Image (tube, rainbow, N blue to C red; front, side):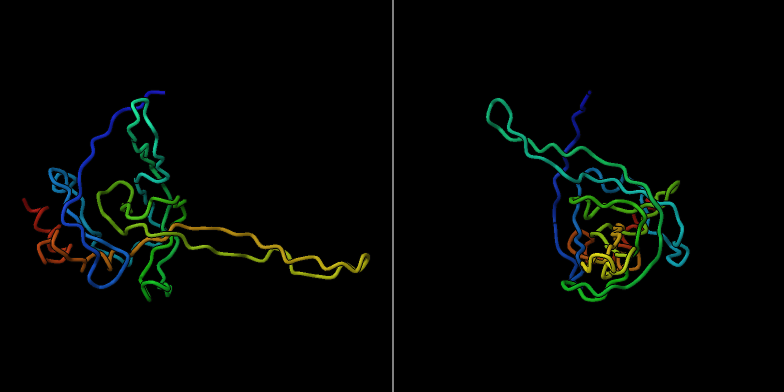
Length: 190
């Protein structure tokens, strides 16, 4: 297997969103303006949209022969589609408009953009998973043995992402106080 070295870009001006959501702004010098990404304009046309995300989940710290440590975090491309928009109440953040995505969200993917396939439009940012349980068999008493048989549930998890509407108003030092939507519109015009 051939592994290639990846560029590392330091984050500058990192700040949590002042609204309290699990979002942050940061500047990535020499990279941010070259990606040509934009925020989706029609947030209501998302159900069923094919999307993808790219991030660096499940990294491992490896010790090198010289004693130094290196983080091994190979990038992962994850594909799926938007199943729905909903607004769960999260213990840490209150109600937040969320996209449920039919794709995995391994630990460490939080913060990765969700992009509509075939475009450069960001529709969300991964923040976790939405776990759904479905009862396959009800608990019952076996008539032959008299033993109680437990309920059987099937557990399914979906990726959860902050909806683009939440991203539009995101601001901080990295956006020079302007909303993310204003900043991205300005960058796309240059």
